[in-house]
Length: 394
Ligand code: TGC
Ligand code: FAD
Image 1 (tube, rainbow, N blue to C red):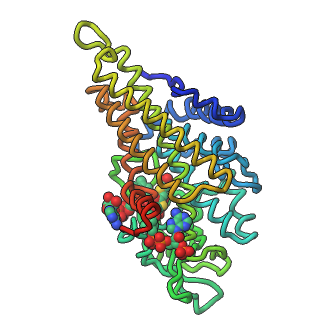
Image 2: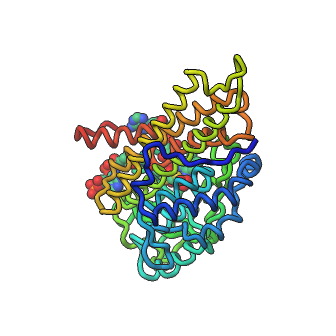
Image 3: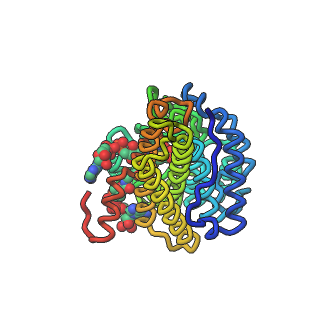
């Protein structure tokens, strides 16, 4: 039986939000409930990304929402985070699409791009007329992108670069018109630089990853670049080493910290309602059993702490005070918390927990990817460990 969401607000969290923030959240929630929830289980079954939602999401200002100008919605970082929360309450795949479009494609063009690159791409990406992807990970360079093999060399025949390499696990790869590709530039002793690569250039190929048990409603691809020529003006001129790529990751990780709260809320609400009507032993709802209550209490407590963590990091980000290790803590904690909530909710639903009549197993499977991408749980452990001890333990 389909379950309607109630709000998850145990300690008057909403009193910490402004009216504008609540409005943005509620508008996003309505959009997701009306447009994504009715189709998401079918999309998940079919392994189909709901492309038909790109234009409506663009019209609501969801892409590049926290950037200024170029038609962007100019939301605060907290408002942007609440958008991510509501999207992932629907499905991690739709939040992933928006994260990549906004934080990993629009942000680097906005931050490191030339005026021409910004004028050409940002309005199109904001309107959903162009789709972007972000190619950092490679088959042999995941947690350690410094080991990337993709190379850029000067094109001897012209004023540009030639790119060669393989990228792996790239969200939206095969549906993108533009790829932000990170490569070591041979003429600068292998300094990492970002390049805009139009995906219709000769030598560029994208192939989808099939057989995923997670993020089934999201496109994940490998990219192959074989002697792909780009003009010099496709180099993102402000990029200056791996640090530039890692700056983009901060933006996406921040959105994930909020998104995970949304997925956890969906699992908690489903489990709470289910426990209220499912009866076992003495014709009593399972919510009357102490062990079931303990699980629900764990979930609401951890969701509440995660909301506060995301909000504080968002407030810091709005004051330009958020540091990478703050964002690592929020991503690490909130995704772990959401995955634990999903597993507990699955348990509370018993056998029904494995069926897609309920959203819980889908969220649980999605969150396994979210735990791994954008820095694995353990990579974030070591980032925080480094920040408090001063010792690099990678
Ligand atoms: P390291 O020597 O530590 O740092 C190199 C330079 O970068 C600086 N830095 C950062 N700057 C800004 N933000 C950050 N988060 C930064 N982290 C480091 C650092 O200060 C240094 O600056 P400088 O001036 O001294 O040069 O670099 P390292 O090579 O040792 O790597 C550190 C490590 C392991 C933390 C990093 O490589 C890392 O984060 N690895 C995880 C890789 C990852 O997260 N990949 C994500 C790929 S994209 C993705 O997954 C998209 S999923 C999207 C979706 O569908 O939602
Ligand atoms: P590995 O780095 O091989 O790690 C495997 C295990 O070893 C992990 O448990 C890890 O924590 C552990 N480990 C590694 N190093 C250490 C260490 N020093 N100490 C302790 N433990 C360690 N990438 C992109 O560039 N763009 C995208 O759009 C994108 N989208 C993705 C979408 C999906 C669905 C998925 C699953 C991944 C995506 N990725 C993307 C890739 C993602 O960022 C990587 O999978 C991630 O960074 C981890 O790399 P890896 O899979 O190679 O794992």
